[in-house]
Amino acid sequence: MSLSAEAVAVQVLDSHETEVVDQALRVVAARAPKDAQILRDLIDQLRQTNALLDSTRALRSPTALGGEGRDESTLIDHLVTLDGLSGDLTLPLKSTLSRTFLLTKIMFLRGFIKATTACHEDAGTLVHDLNEELAQSIYTLLCEELFLALLRKPDVTMPIKRRAADQLISIWDDATIEIDDFAPMLESAWHARNRVTSNYGCLLGASETFRLASEDCNPLVIDFFAREDRSVGEAQAFEEFLFNMTTEELGGLRAAMKKAGLTAVSPAWAAQVVGRQLEELEHSREIDPMALYRSYNRRQLAADYRLMSGTPGPRRTAEGYLMVHLLDQQKTEQP
Image 1: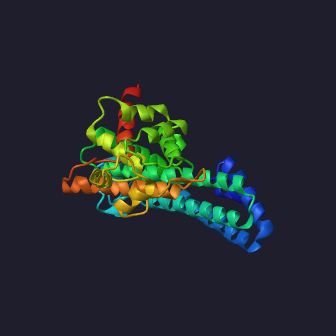
Image 2 (image 1 turned 90 degrees about the vertical axis):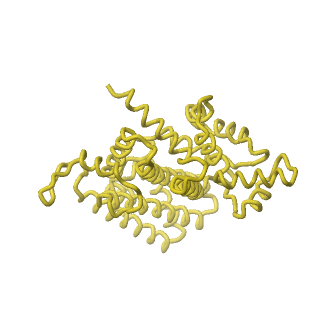
Image 3 (image 1 turned 45 degrees about the horizontal axis):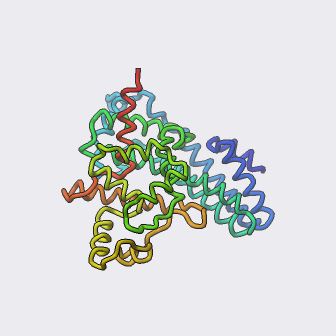
């Protein structure tokens, strides 16, 4: 069976994804038939996961259970009260199925990248295209997690939380939605950051910010974090974003620089002081979206800890501050 027929059955791959995946399968099938069969099995798993998701009631459709009416309004009322400690247990089933589908798609694309890379030395362009599709799926997953993080933040206003909850419902209800459909500005920030390796230097972030702009980061993102009235938390969170380090790690690094009498540091020296490998989000001009995912989660965990412990530092990630700003703008755009 041709991949195009399989992709139509899945009904979640757009035209470019279908073209890239079809080409990759043909390359693998010609050189590694056993690997190609594994990839076909992944296609079937993706189709089955999507079928289960499609068979679940749309979250915006009214229903009732135990004499209690449920609709999108009651779901939003529920979502804005989440504290995050219950995990997926208090989320609607369709949200879990939607996340499962997205994770299945991510693993599906990772499998194609591995098989294509292994069997064809000259498949650089094809692997690059697959990696770009993988990045978009990971960015979509990241944005879903960002919305959930905003729901559990006590310092986020209720109108912002309701808009975040409404966007989550749209994502959970439609597996074809990707980040460029609902958060293109945030996608541009991640797209650019995934193409910049921090040099650290004197830790001012000027060169990293310039390189973000050169990688086509939406200028409104940089303007937001460079404005004169930005808060201390926003400035610190943007530093974390630029250097792929927490505020605590940056504080320790600056203290070590002062003690050693240094005005600039290398990535290797910084890694030694911090005590962990400092991942490059791009290497040899090829991005690593998994590294960006880890970077976000590290910074989000640190922000959550500060909020619970009352310790100093940003209460949100840079992405969180930016998203609150974007959601707040929606009220002025509505008629």
